[in-house]
Length: 337
Image 1 (cartoon, rainbow, N blue to C red):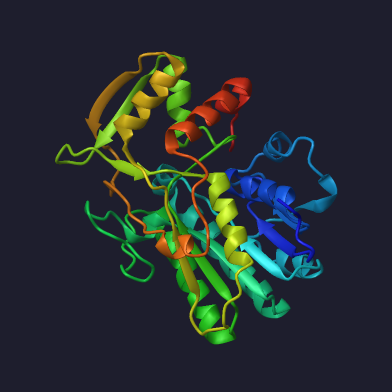
Image 2: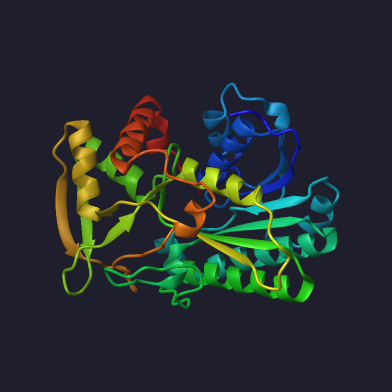
């Protein structure tokens, strides 16, 4: 893809995290963006992730700075950088840890959002893209079609509640301070260099080591399912949305992005087992997680109308991720916290 003739100056948060690092890779690959990346390596980030994904890339196009976005003291420092766009991937994102330590999640996710919105207000930035999740809507029944602004938020756990709070804060700053904000809600992400606590790397590791894999159901023994999305495809969607002009309104733009194929958790385990050539050890159980959500749903038609589409089918994405992971086995054992 040809590089854009107009250089975008961007503040990208969460760049040392899984999804944010894929965003940084896509920016370096496809644009002349100059990217400022505040990192802490304390919230799911890892200092090895960016070098692993951006090996051989132009390191002059991004700058890492050690700043905690949840600390109000970061505001003055970030205001000194030159940027006109904010893309926010930063958030604590693991449901089980949010249940064990909800205060940590709320303080981090809400404080960083307020600080970023204050930066956007003071700096009068031209574009604020906020990455959210399908989990803010809670579990939706089979056959439902969740278009933008169709369903209210019904978060089931502290993590999804903190993401819902981030969206509410974004709406308030858009309405009160006329900040041009876009919210993108995404389904579950997969990709290279993902944290081991997430479902796909966890089952890859468990199958290789022949550990028992617990596949959860709800209390009625119904199997959970998800529509998985490759992280690089989300990054492409963010660039598409960022480059699409819109009228300044008193309410944020919103786009849903979803994988097109719905897989049960059991289907994913068996698929990985077949690709590895190893029979997984599976134990089906009722989920011990309070507030277990059976399935999520997002409709991507609005985003597709801008020209976005998935780059491959899920099976092929998982095969590529698996090959990368087997060539980089340290990512199955790295301690992120």
